[in-house]
Figure 1 (cartoon, rainbow, N blue to C red):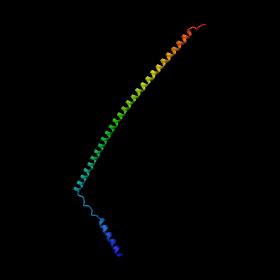
Figure 2 (figure 1 turned 135 degrees about the vertical axis):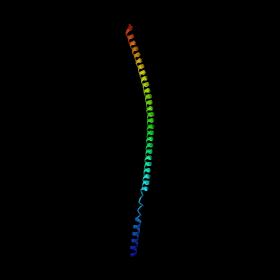
Figure 3 (figure 1 turned 60 degrees about the horizontal axis):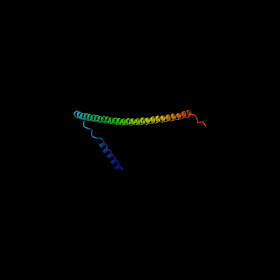
Length: 130
């Protein structure tokens, strides 16, 4: 048991020795300046990179927007062309219907005139006497 306690105590002292790492050497003002300068340069580089990425994103967004607008214009033109073709076809059909209606009216008028003429002639002709 004494050996176990001695081993535990030795282990405790060893752990304590490792836990106390030597304190870093006091930074000299020159070393601090160099480190600050490096950090500043790193920050500048990061800002520059971020700006470049943002600029690229804006450029891509503009390109995408232009493509979308162009596509929308093409679609709109196609729709207008289709609407014009539909209107032309509708107008053509309406003209044909009007022409047919006029022809029917003319035919009906001619039939009525012939009927009236037949009735008038029959009324004007004296009935044969026996």
